Image 1 (cartoon, rainbow, N blue to C red):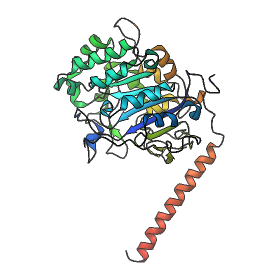
Image 2 (cartoon, rainbow, N blue to C red):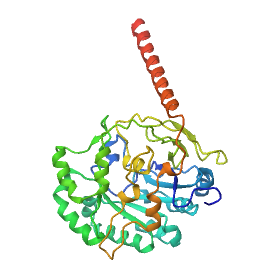
Image 3 (cartoon, one colour):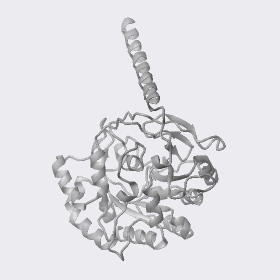
Image 4 (tube, rainbow, N blue to C red):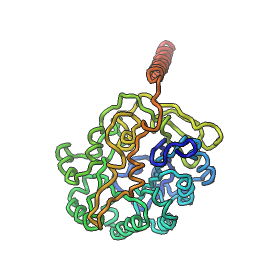
Length: 373
């Protein structure tokens, strides 16, 4: 134990930082930005809190232990001004950090990789392998070179492809390149169509054909995600208590992508970190279930995040994730937090609140009808 905190190899909380910055050097056809009416605005966000203030607000003493922190911009994360400074302050507190990046912004990457090795052992890059864009811009070699820089510096990196119909003709190329450069095949995620109510698969192919194309990669990440994609989660979810979805520019936090407000978590850092479990999710399926469910926001899933992110590699042996980070990524939230004794109360309140809103809506419609509106 560390001053009453959880051990350093056990996760206490998930902090997912949203960064509303749409600047990007790529234009991937499947990107969720391209699905929005306003996209690629090219504006740097105004940070209302300094790196020191942010790090203090999420210090382990306030959280009760160490966090998995995800940094992800709407555009390319490493193009956010001073992101390396914010990231370093978080890691210096003892947290473990995942940075989502297309791995082509070399100057910022090299600033991060110049940190002491003991800090880099807590850093993992989720390398978005945008093969067609990299090929179009002649940056495939740069992508591979920068990933090797990460490993050589003592940090972790895992490679992930968003499967798109347009990429299928190039699968053999991708596999050959990956085995040569990374010693393993990339993991495969699932592209979402955020324009649909059901958050459907983003493909025009029949599912049998889609599965046949992408199952060739033997990705445990893909296999787990398929088991939860499109399936509504009805068990008690601890998002909002064991996790928070925070706007890095303002500190405004929500329980999850669909949850209620938790207030501003940067504003009064001496106060207890807010905890309000979401209970039952309202979405068609868990939006990022590969993360939330493998970490244990809904207890009971055997799959562990570190295992589905990692790969053994033929490039000199070893694996994509460093041992210390892999161990932390394999810990579970239910191992470090108390289960809520009042799950049924939370769910009952959700039900009553939903019924109240529905009755108000129906009453309003009836009133308008009576008034001839």
